[in-house]
Image (cartoon, rainbow, N blue to C red):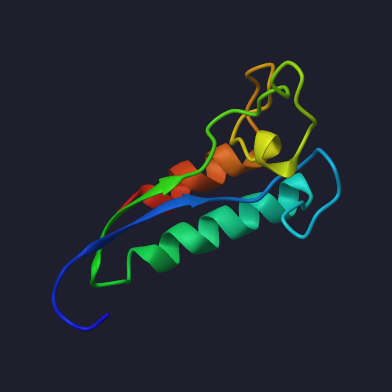
Length: 94
């Protein structure tokens, strides 16, 4: 990965619900990790940008089983903010 090209980091996040997994944490831990990750990413010189995986929790698709990825939102499925939304907003401020 030498060189000068800048890269994008896409689809990072932590779940707060769904089936237990190594990606599932409490809402407080999600907020802390989101804040720390975003602040750290600003220090990566070769990073062009980043995308958080899920802005809002989703229900499982019809006929599909639940998995952690549906629960990575910065907001809950009902649209209410999780602590991680405030953490994200705080972390992106210069």
